[in-house]
Image (cartoon, rainbow, N blue to C red):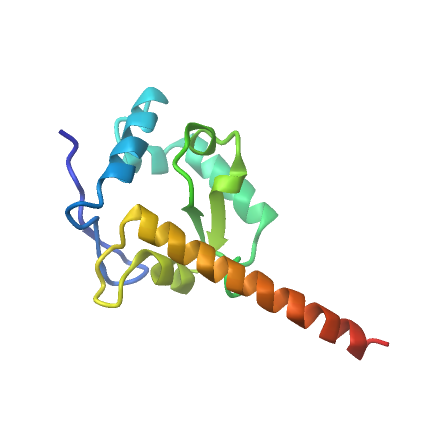
Length: 144
């Protein structure tokens, strides 16, 4: 049986770790990681593979994909094998610390389950893209 790790995030100052009942996506992630040769998600995040993927994603998207501030975090929105193995960077999103906390944590500071985190991330990304498409024509008009 996989152990569930709860930590205090230095970025958010909040309790991290899935609530009971939210483990299935994380269990599936851990199974994929074991097939890729990692003992745990923590080992994966400390690996040369992750460091390379993180650097590549931040080089491609140096700004937070939600608010536009400087990105410091690369967040998984997919735990599929191709995403974890680095064959598909579309499963990663560049985020600033503040937006990462917004998508990961509930108002009471507990970690959202994967599906809730994914839903929140997609909603905020969609809102950002909608705002950008509205602002683009206005900016273009200012330059005429």
